[in-house]
Image 1 (tube, one colour):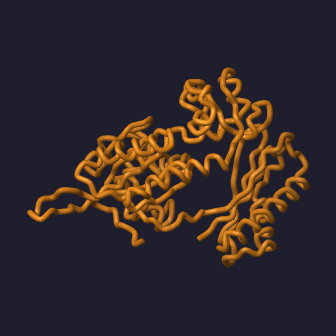
Image 2 (cartoon, one colour):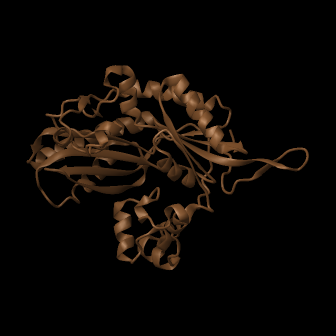
Image 3 (cartoon, helix red, strand yellow):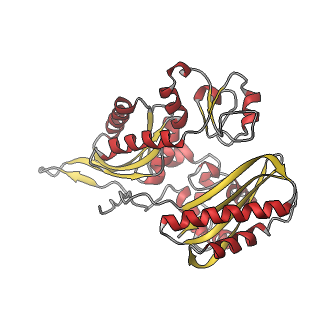
Length: 359
């Protein structure tokens, strides 16, 4: 299906020339998806703080995949070590990750969205964009959320925008179980005074670099000098940051099949690895597993990334761009080891990961 362009909403006129609908982007995001699926499977857990992560044993190493809203009230969140989650919330119920169950429920939700007939772009298990011509997008959003709940028992929040960027950010203001519209007219009123890492695509590291340039808020980034940002971040990324801060995105909603941007493997070790010869051997093992995943994907990799989490919980990454796209295990292994060699500290390691990225 041809992607629907989603820049500025365009009017759809009836026979009398009156504008009856405009093209909106809706971002549908399932609330606390993994935890919600587990509660559906275990109704007795409704209302209790639920944490899903690892093999469900907080005495072992692992991180939180998701936490119910009740658990979040105790400071438990995704990425937190399970042991820390247990200390913060002794009454939490810990459950193991069940990937197959989440994939099955996600497939049901995406089928419901596709059945609307609107262009639907799947982002992952729990979120998708839709391009919707509507005079009342809020009502459409509520109808979609109702369809999802009726079909699966899950609740969703829906963000509405003139493009994907606006819709994605709007969803956060609608959670949980709500609908929120964010447009070019309301953009700075809602986001102008917020820190730059409130924007989709800007993380903590980029925000710190922007702060070093005296740019701390979305409004300040939107007014920044493109030449200054191009010098700091590169000729493509610098101007792009300004567009993001202005709420501008030209990316279309596309129903093309979802293609993973990367394939990776990572392991959390129950005992720290202090011997870096063993670290090297583990990275080689992971690199060959990832090479197999790349071959199965049928697309060559262009870059490899190595992730190291030192004990107790400090994480770093280094990458290496491949000379040419490939799925050759020997080439992927060599690039992986080159990335590993960039880690100069030989401290004990609790987690290792290898990721291959596609173009």
